[in-house]
Amino acid sequence: MTDTVTFDEGLIKALREAENIIFFTGAGASAESGVPTFRTGTDSLWVDFDVEDYATLDGFNRNPQKVWQWYKGRRENMAALQPNVAHHVIARWQEKAPRVTVITQNIDNFHQDAGSDLVIELHGNIHHFKCLNDHPVESSSVDNSEEPPLCEICGSLVRPDVVWFNEPLPQEAFDHAEMFSRECSVFIAVGCSMEVQPAAFLPAFAASGGAYLVQINPEASIFDKYAYTLRGKAGEVLPQLWQAVWGESFN
Ligand SMILES: [Zn+2]
Image 1 (cartoon, protein in one colour):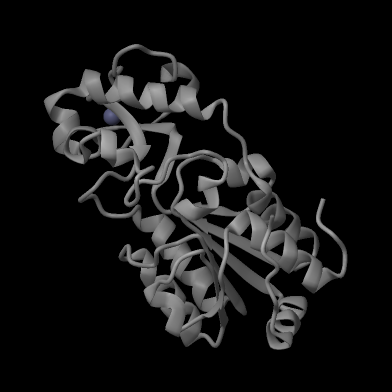
Image 2 (cartoon, rainbow, N blue to C red):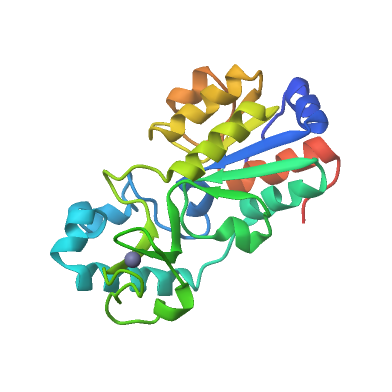
């Protein structure tokens, strides 16, 4: 049974009139697809696996084979998963607003799979690869490899193109995210803890440009005092929001 969420008239009006919307998504947006969340809770990936071994450059340098195999297993597990209704509502929003930008902290490619055209990935993509010197590597040439291949340009090891702990966000992606955040009229955070810097700066950039801040989150967060909060899971709230704004059921 889905809880019914009530929506403020000001929010509905802002969304109907918005020319430029950002959906900023975190682990909560993909949890309903079955993707384990990274940081907290009993379903966290890191209950069973040590972050230091599997999600740091040091861990990869210590045992590239082990880390490579683990990511290969994760890609294979993900192949059985699909975007959920939250991804689909966000993708369909493109039919309604002149510009819809997705900024995501997820690495699962589900926004693109659902049909979103403009997706900025702050933490990389588990299906993409690069070498230790940041040369991009074609996925199809290494995806099925049983051990980390060597870069054809520089000979260094190939690794997943995801942001590991203690690594900076990709500068170009963050610069784009900042630019779009400053220009948007509505900024909707979906399933984000809002505590991961520097991504948590993005709503502040949006607010400085006068944007209406909204969050969809089943749990209390530090963002509660800054944003209009819709309490609930993304996959339950977004179809209701669609119906309230556009006067048609989402299916
Ligand atoms: Zn290279």
